Length: 141
Image 1 (tube, rainbow, N blue to C red):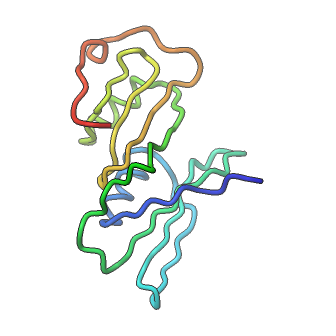
Image 2 (image 1 turned 60 degrees about the vertical axis):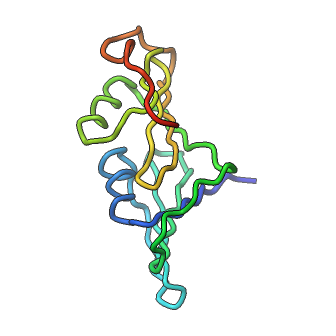
């Protein structure tokens, strides 16, 4: 058995791609438009050698209402080289850091459609740093 992908439904494909590609740094691997079914599938990945995990963004063209957040979905998780630099870069692009990396190890953000994304420091936790160490949580993650 081999893990293939996680599918996320997105209402605004442009906003989702801005978040996952422009801000988070994933790469668009392939795209499939289905005229008959009126949907687009966009597969994203890290592009790192040996990392076959993908996210499938499903955009149903006629969807006008926000998708409800199902309790069956927990979060996506990505390992990063420097959690503080990653969070600073994301914050500069307008992404709210909902659970700051106070511990030098873990942070949470959300996509425009409300999917929770966990960021984990590669290797041991970094030493505690401001402004992150005293930054409170906000919202839900």
